Image 1 (cartoon, rainbow, N blue to C red):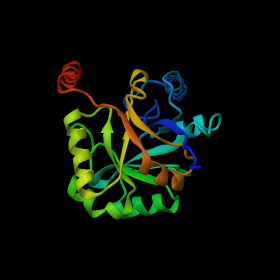
Image 2 (cartoon, rainbow, N blue to C red):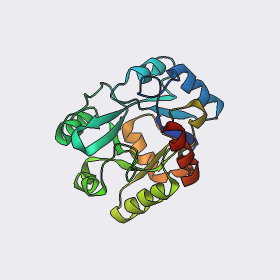
Image 3 (cartoon, helix red, strand yellow):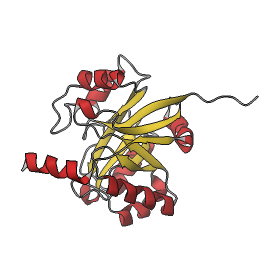
Image 4 (cartoon, rainbow, N blue to C red):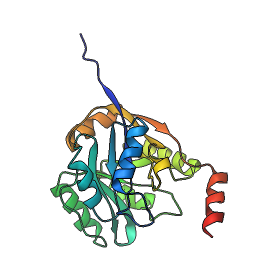
Length: 215
């Protein structure tokens, strides 16, 4: 009899107060994720793993220690299952090598997004053999741009990954994936091949309303 896989609900891109422009503490974001029925979240603060480590001390099965690293002129890159933080502003070669030394699961967040640091598709193709995935569903991105990312990954035969990119408690779990349970980067590499996305990005109208409040 074929073994039945246990699917879990995971959000691979969550920020806390250790990131810029985020006021919710790691504990508040953790509580929001639990209340929404998520079974794993990757805490991916900008250029630090301090918040993720703090949460992982108490719930290592629920928290994936990650980091969203700003690297020279190529935008941002995310590592999951991090053991040590990688400094920002380094070259692509340095950053990728440092991620690979930790056997981190590596993905490019929010491609095509004009309001984020992002890695242009041409640059993604240059490093495609050195990454595990590209974000095809970002909860803060325009839906049309998420669709572009998904189409790009399909054509380039690059694995997709999804996350809310939550900076607010209410947005945790806005996007993510249903996939077989996993505990390591290598297990995630296999599990994500069977994953199903959930959630969505923002409509153009809601994004314009947000910009009006900011400016």
